[in-house]
Amino acid sequence: MSEENLKRVYFAQFSIIVEDQFVLLPYSAATVWAYAQSFQEIQSNYKLAADILFVKRPIDEIMEKIENPDVFGFSTYVWNSNYTDVLAKKIKEKYPDCLIVYGGPQISNEDEKLFLKKPWVDICVHQEGEIAFKEILLENLKEKKWDNIAGLSYNDNKKRSKTGPSVRIKDLNSLRSPYLDGIFDGYVEKNPEYTLNAILETNRGCPYRCTFCDWGSSTFSKLTQFDLSRIYGELEWMGKNKIDCVVNADSNFGILKKKDPEIVDKLVETKEKYSYPRLFTTNWAKNNNELSIEMAVKLNKAGLLRKFAIALQSLDETVLSNIKRRNMKLNNFDHLVNLAKKNDITVMIELIMTLPGETYEGWIQNYCKLLKYDNLYIESYPLSVLANSEMNNLKYKEVHGLQTTRVKLPFNDYVDEYEHMVLSTKTMSWEDASQAWIFTWLVRSMHSYGFLYYVCNFIVKEFQIGYYEFYKAIEEEIQKSSGLIKDIYKKQKKLINEKKFSEFYLTNWWIDPVGEKSRKQFYEEMKEIVGRKFDHPLLNEIFDFQNIACYNPNENYPIQKKFSYNFITDKQEPCLVEFRHGGIENHKSYKSYISLNRSGRWKTKFNPISQNV
Ligand code: B12
Ligand code: SF4
Image (cartoon, rainbow, N blue to C red):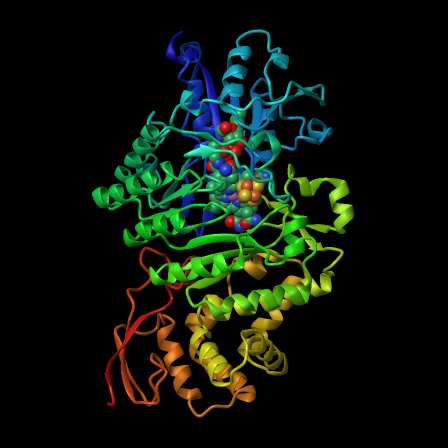
């Protein structure tokens, strides 16, 4: 068939754009096409008509770029679902003969009204898409009888017809790599306004079955693997193409004790060779052990690791049993965090709020217990009910009294996106949950983002109190105060009460006033607030120390400053300290740098350059 007679295939996988700058290449759509186009019959009948669409733009602008599509594949996720629907509907209206195929985790396995709600969709592919999509393209050349292709739901006059269950791809090495097949060649050059990141897949599946996750469902329990040769080749491509961050899609990196450390060695080697990738992020094996730390140490030394993430989700045994999860023993946890500290690694703990069984008091007490580790910060996520998770089951919701609401996600470019957030449970009312959120936000902002970190540690030690007592007292005093801090607190309270979660927790709008524009006022007011509960002769000085030691964009580093007390060694002796910080690296703004670098990069390096000055 001549080039112009080939059927025109388009794909769209709209990504999250982080801080207006960092975007992931559309890997999932690309792997589906890479496999399909490796078949001669497909090459002779179809062509990819344009680059895969991955950055949301006004819908009309996107429509103008699309010419006579014959097949359009969409990757759907919670962050692009509504935008995808608007675009796909328009395409179907303009090109009624175009076959619209949806794939990705946002497709419900259960919803019988799927095609009644989305009549513009012709076929939905459940789970892995490579083989199914190839077969759809081949069948599309024939009678369009979809029943013989496993793992589909198709639109039968708006009724949902399901074909047999999806079959897991046993040999992942039969698939093609979109990087090595050149699908992304030129993307970096064509998108100079963005810093491009890339997904690395080294295996698929997860042996666990946490009830909030749609990944570890029974069909995805067995781990299948890609060969090292493919992975090495992809890492070379990423290095050569100046990929900023490699995002590993594994569920449990480190679970393969021989292979995974070899991937780490290759990452380090690639960075040494090309200076890229600059960073590597991953989900680490649930029962992290010393091997994971060894791998993290290597990554850290090469500057590839921003943080070592441990997903605990909850510290409460009842909660863990309700979500079918078991964490490592506490003494093992303690050992790991200390081992990380010895190796200068920051640990990020992931928790989820309003899990079934969690209580207000339990949450904030456990949260504050973690603050004793000075190389650790905590990230708390709202509990979101995903379409294909066990938590979406009606019985499960009833047993645990889960009440949900639709909340807007932060990715609202052109079309609003929503998730179903759990507001309350049998053990945590919405009143308790919103209070817990406010407290969590306050501690995160002041401690994990560093704005009160040194002051808090000093007071806790001097007054021999716990972190919980300190932050509870600060919250109480803020409520009684007036000024900038009270205004920020009030605005945050309003946002959470209105359930505007992303403005409340994700946009970090408050960093500009607190850290940059009104920093002086912030520290003056905070000194008053702290002083009212914890009066101390060194209060002025610890606040001066705090203001410089938490990177201040209004100052030029290095800075030298004399103190009458040595805050570094905790000794009653005068001390001259030098503070150093390298600035905000390749970030566009201070807010972006701080938001993405909670892992202590706000900490300036400092030493006492002389004592007894
Ligand atoms: C990398 C990743 C991210 C990246 C962003 C990814 C991106 N592209 O923009 C980051 C780290 C930013 C991220 C964030 C989040 N993520 Co995430 N993330 C992943 C992860 C680990 C890997 C995705 C991936 O590339 N996988 C590999 C590819 C090959 O798999 P795939 O995308 O499923 O594609 C296959 C099939 O779905 C299908 N397919 C896909 N597209 C198409 C298209 C067609 C036409 C066809 C036929 C088939 C098809 O075929 C593909 C190949 O077999 C997955 C878990 C996982 N391993 O899948 C979660 C996952 C996608 N994330 C998830 C969630 C919930 C989130 C968050 C919302 C979590 C949160 N509450 O904060 C946030 C987003 C918002 C935020 N607050 O930042 C859920 C998505 C659920 C959903 N219904 O959308 C997943 C599935 C994990 C889970 N818990 O269940 N995430
Ligand atoms: S949360 Fe992680 S460990 Fe649990 S099922 Fe999902 S991917 Fe597996």
